[in-house]
Image 1: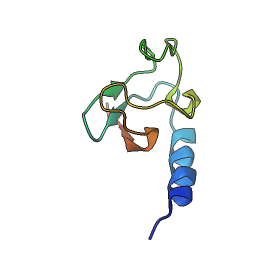
Image 2: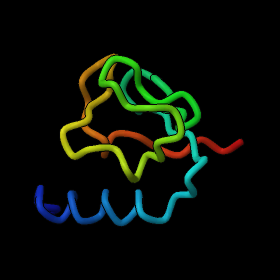
Image 3: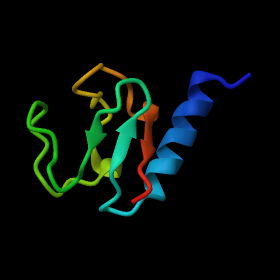
Length: 74
């Protein structure tokens, strides 16, 4: 069984392997985080890679944690 601490380590490891331009999609509501656009709601400026989002950042649509986002294959 995976603990919350294990999941947090794995989530940050995945985020660190993403390119700065990688777009990610929430598995719950399909909201897309596009680094080129940032997140106006949380005042995240355009050009902010997913790996650089603050720890408190959550999906602006459904409030899911960053760990619920998966890279989009373009």
